[in-house]
Picture 1 (tube, one colour):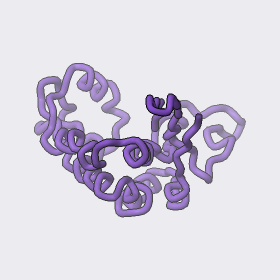
Picture 2 (tube, rainbow, N blue to C red):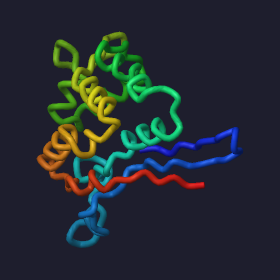
Picture 3 (cartoon, one colour):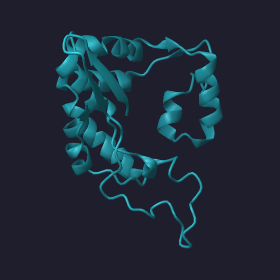
Picture 4 (spheres, rainbow, N blue to C red):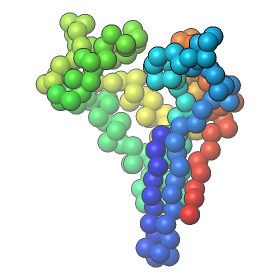
Length: 180
């Protein structure tokens, strides 16, 4: 998710675009508490139950449609090419992957491992073909596929299989908020 501040010089107008993630409709006030009412460590941070409805795809599409000067495809072209062709892993990403490695599921380990099935290291190339396909679908559908198409089905199936509570209704009801 994200927030975006827009300034339109011609009208001297400011807007704030709220594209933050939102809690699933099935969220409850005590979903991260044990039977005694104590917080379960890291449950609200790690894993599928911590997932909110992502706002960034809708936010980028909203910004492009309402304020953009290029096509949505042009806007996302660099991200698509970087995912498809790869980029050189820097030390910061290497440190992040290594520090989180034991918490990764098998799918994440497949993405962030090298040819020796070890965590990717600085200087290696990270290619993300699935991400490139996702960006392409988001680009072509102006983000609708993320909330109502094949990407939404994939997201829901994966999240629910890992114990998440996201639903199709959550995704379809997500809306961007524009504030003065």
